Length: 100
Image 1 (cartoon, helix red, strand yellow):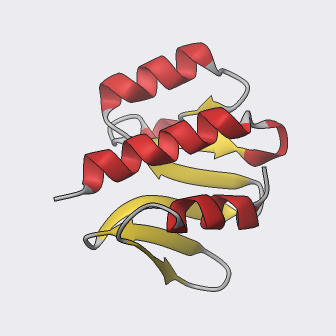
Image 2 (cartoon, helix red, strand yellow; image 1 turned 90 degrees about the vertical axis):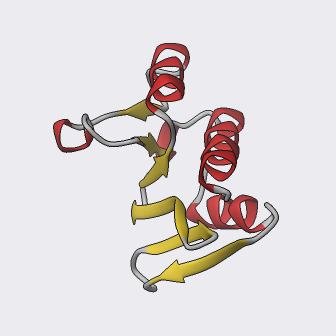
């Protein structure tokens, strides 16, 4: 999955706006983070903890949680070998979680 595909999918969701920088673009709904590109190969997606565990169990090659994120409602998606449908579902879950 490419960074461009991440952005296109995020922007297809109602109310999502691009922010961040050129190097680290991010997409927000109601000024709340949905997804951010950490680097060209990694996206950080904000998901509830119970959904995060399900994503990790179902797609261990797509998602991971580095130690610095263990206490946060976030998961990393490794784009080079990600399942696009799983990443899209995680972004949609983040969008639903962050809407007011």
